[in-house]
Image (tube, rainbow, N blue to C red; front, side, top):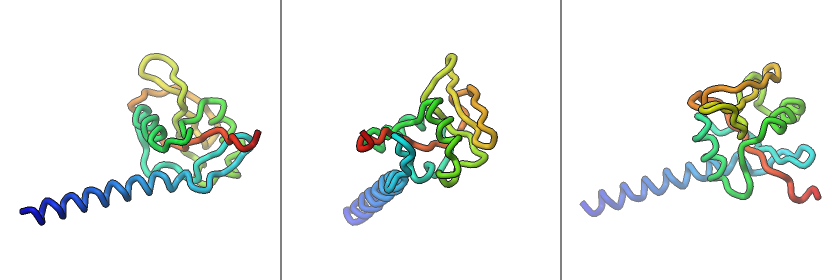
Length: 131
């Protein structure tokens, strides 16, 4: 019985470690565009708005959801950022109750959607070293 509990604890810890490593790997070697650092890739799955905020906060070190202006900046520079074409991305900006802004990277359209909609997430942060 003790061996079974120990094995389950080891498996659980291994899965948690793998999950943390996988999430942090998106921020390794970020893409630098002006004063903005952009995560190398999206999170592996689409998320509701609240979940996307929490996922970015867990990355620590200033990583966060981009605001609307930053999302548009990413759209205008999408040729420098792999994997953005044709996807909806959450911004940190909220509009009316239960709605937040997102951007469609197929045509650059921004719109507000229900926060319960699942969209892609590309974390950003300010490049403090650029000053």
